[in-house]
Length: 606
Image (tube, rainbow, N blue to C red; front, side):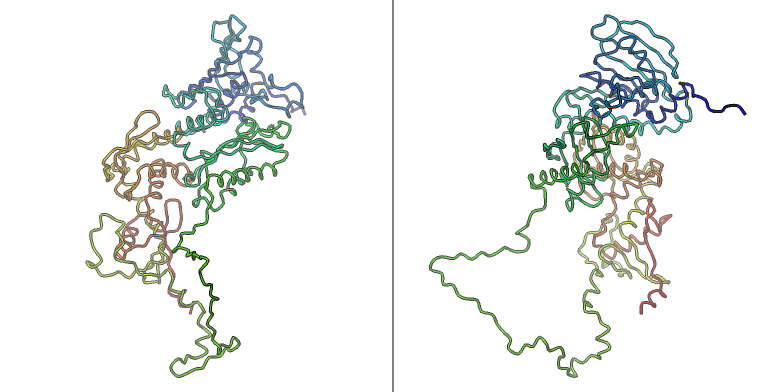
């Protein structure tokens, strides 16, 4: 039998390595921009076409490379950052493994133009699928200019699994954010299909956060800062009232490198305990600086998973400084002395006569006397008394008849309480609608029922392009961050079909002149941000279709609250509209809308 073990060709090995390092166009952007940072660049431009599938170009004004360095840089494990294993524990640069350029060149067509400041001429190298096609001496600007074309052209299976352009572009924007935020001293430009997304000039930390997101951030953040022997921390955390359901604005950095840390995230959440609305988390931009020997960044190919030698201590430091910051800016809950009435503080002068308070005492009271005298008037059989719970008065708490003065939630319902007989319905805990059916008692979650009703209504409106609009007196201009703006461009047609009168208004801004009729009159800006948040966090494995996801997201935002008191007519309207739905039993994301407590189950309780 012949030998079967053999060494892989370099081209195959590079493609395997590319599978770890280069997962999508955003991975290329990350690696090239990090190399530009390490070159000492003060200005970095990223040009993207077709969400990076056709072109990713990164131009910097850094130190550039010689002809020899430019050629060898595309070999595996070629790096200028480390010479021996111990160097791994003193890393201050971004890229150091020497895998990125070799991996990129293995699955794309790459052209590099580079020149050092001290050289008169530069070099242009063209590589396709790990094969060097040409190397020429040229005249070019100082620094490096990488152009990566036709990503995964020779690995069609990988290219097939890339997501839609809007999704891939959002990943690219996220990578640029993660590099631009900890480097405010460097200018960044990002363009997509000749449309400028970012133009960030050198600035300080707060100005960079505002540039990456929007100008409202300054009023929504409070600073955190501390210096310890273990770690130095700078940054900003969000005020609780501006917390969000998504994690787009949650960043940890260590020594200028973005990192993920579920452990440190937990410390932030604990610091906000009892301050956040349900199912939300705060924004935070936390920059840690520590001795490189105290951390290990070489545990994952993307270098985003970082291990701290003294992680528990850093956890407690983060927790402490955030609590201190929230307390310093009066964001933690304070004692309210104006709850119900005022505290009367008596004014005492030197002539005031102080009288000892008198306490009335019942001389006939006997605490050991358990039996009370029984008369015919108040007699109740002892067996009946034993079966009645002590808190029997509370049995009816939450089971209330609704008040006729409440405003009807359905604007198209014109009937009044006196125009119709009261249906056999009750509201429980301002959350559930109870009504009798032949087999027992039906219990309906009012919010989920309304969500199902609106979902099918919005989905039909998108299909028919006939949503009802509430016009505003004046258009409202809303500024969005880059990711939210890209999502808005993706879903704007669906929003218009449902009833939003909405237009693009300049760079990363929209103008809203009307909202759907089903929305309660309120702040259109709040509605827009709420819909975008729902859309970003809606599980794609449940609903992949964009139109259905936007309908489901809007239904969640527009549905009535679970603690709203309803009129009889409103409850009857919900029941009628629910059972006109195609799928009345479940919400779009599969939650139960109603259940029936059957007659025999009720009988068994007695």
